[in-house]
Length: 557
Image 1 (spheres, rainbow, N blue to C red):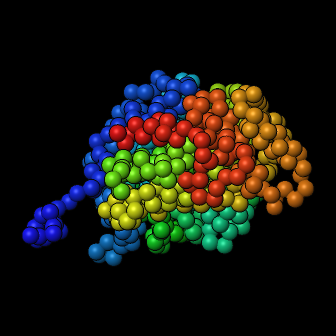
Image 2 (image 1 turned 45 degrees about the horizontal axis):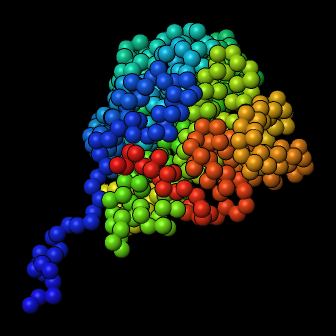
């Protein structure tokens, strides 16, 4: 009699204990934390829009489009078959499908096209969701979002560009702006010799007439990173006679000719593969000034401030997708006669990840509310936003990579295979920490706010005081932090630790006020009090991990 319960020749073909794909779920309605954040921070009126996009994000066709857009990466065509220079980047059709979904939902423009309180919170929900679908297309949506305030300051430019950038029609045709049904905008600031040190740029700008905003210039120079080079226009910095100045560079000129915008090569990147990044050359390239000469860096920083907010939101969304995948896998996969989620060690890991995800989500949406209020004239909100934006950007981006790594490990070897979404998320996770200022640049920005803008720090601690008395560990942590921030000696050396503690304080205060006791209690015990392990899954004993997991695993049911 055979020792095998089935014939040996059939064993290799029988598939058991494999996890079904997580498809056709709603990433909004099955996310308790997100729905609560949207409602609490003033964006509940946009629930229908978020619900619709949540269904799109969780759909099988969008997931397949994301896979294809990253598998079949953009290709640069510098010349046509007869030798004419065309500087054209060819994308897989799936990329254009994704762009139509994102722009059709208003991921890029919802905050500007809905003139009511909570518009930036509503738009944050759309961005949070779309970053769970495909991160490469989240780059152009974020740049469109950040473009509007600066463009609006120059009426002669805003008249044509703002309506096109806010349009919910995706139009990939390389045409003059007057012929477009919708437009995209990119950014190319840094140069090879300077990186984040924008004052080291060498690109030159020559006025063709009056040297003032809205007037034409010619630019000559080289840019080391240009993201999404098939956009209809680009923000850039160049030195005019009176210093660094911000310009708008169109890809197509008003008369239909191609601008002298030359794509030198595409970057072969670790991740974000669906989105082309390139080096570009300006050679007497036509551009329009967006600010007074010499005011380019402050103008660029104003724009970058909004993209940093979007990276805090996007990294939180990326972590949520990684958590969702881990919860789904562990709810279905069995080992040692139990599902993985029922194993004590795995429960600790999943609960730790769930707490981390919720902490970043609540902070991102609190920041979106501050952004919204600041743009409606709330001075206190503007002060809070000034310092909390880089704090949230720094910490969310720093935590994304180890978070996704741990979520990937929950899948074992299956999570390391390219057919799964996890390798793409893993490659994507470090990028937001580099874009718009790497960790040290962001920390220095926070330290500038602490030293030069003490009311901003006071506004942040005012937010912490709203949670006063809710948890003794949070109170003690915030008190120690306030004392340490009063010591300005050697602050740069201590900068990362200070910013990390600022982020944890804000997250703790929000969770104590708004999260279930199990979540807030475990966060304060693990992040603010005593030893916090160096890896996820090191929560102390005695906490209600099952409740934490159940709260997070709705999307994985």
